[in-house]
Amino acid sequence: MNESFRPLGIDLFAGAGGFSLAAVKSGIEIKFAVENDQHSIATFADNICKLEGGKGTKIYRQDILTCDVEELKKEHFSDRECDLLLGGPPCQGFSTHRIRDAGVNDPRNELLMAYFSFVREFMPRVFLLENVPGILWDRHKDYLDRFYSEGRAVGYHLFEPEILDARDYGIPQRRRRVFILGLRPDVVRKDFAWPPVATHADPRLKNPIRKPWVNCARAFDKTLDRDLNDIHMRHGEALVEAFRNTPANGGSRKDSGRILPCHKEHDGHKDVYGRIDPKQPAPTMTTACINPSKGRFVHPTEHHGITVRQAARIQTFPDDFVFHGGLTAAGRQIGNAVPVELGKVLINHLKPLLSGTAEIGNLPNEEGMAAMSKEAQFA
Image 1: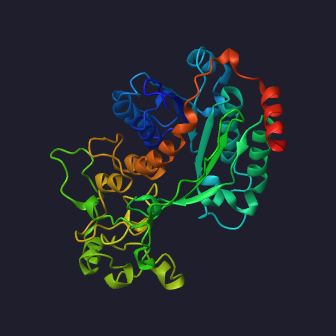
Image 2 (image 1 turned 90 degrees about the vertical axis):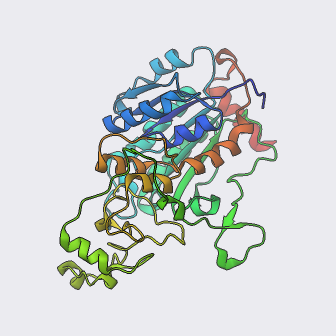
Image 3 (image 1 turned 60 degrees about the vertical axis):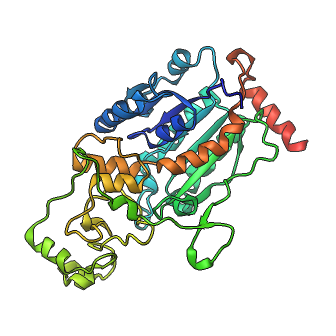
């Protein structure tokens, strides 16, 4: 890629900016981002918009369903094409935690098609969508089939959904997420393989090619002085006593002697109130990662839940990245984010495809894109 060329990108459902941070650190300029949560926007503005590649980013605080996509294109891409479209539509409707047929007709699932409306209008060279594995469940098949059908109708080459585990790319966290990649048909993909080859593996496999998974011990190193995110939940004395009784570095709820009525009837969720084992990759940082009642989120040795900063480190945010909105809001922002270093791995893998410098007037229309796609099928 020409070193003077800086690809242009868009981040939808941007949240605190995990994907955007990965992009700007990979040499992408984010032209605009869309997000409707006020605390996430404050975090994005205070961090991403101070970086090279993010200083000119305009943030739109609105529901993506209300966006005037045509006007956004006129304002931000009148003389250059969009190279990279990123985004992770809210995943609650697709969550694997939902039981039976819950989420089948969840209106949030329509946000998947809202994402595609930007694909159709901006015709980016590459788009990358992130979501939870639950999006692949049979109950959601109609949504995904529609997404793929409309993508192919306008000419995109769509790769099959890939479930990637963050551990396999050096992230100190076991986090499985689906990534869907689409390439415009004029993007040369000779010798391009998706997804990128994993660099790390379970050390028990004794794989000589890959490095062992990275443990999460560094997340619990001393924090910077006056770190606004060095905060954790305040617990009642009964819960603190239970943590005192829980063995260090991986102890679980049963070890603590804490048995609630619901535990007598249902003995699942064994990780609840468990301590994180720093010798292993951390559990998935969810939107409730600062709350020990929601998972294995107790500090390895201290008697409280993990701090915002510790959760952010597990998500590979740098220590100078400050989350706004308080404890609960920060936890939600962290849990929703794409791990920054994983985002960098994926975007850097895509950068060779982003080197086009076509002007808008020279881009084929949707009919031309579809024709190019059809020709490629028979080449």
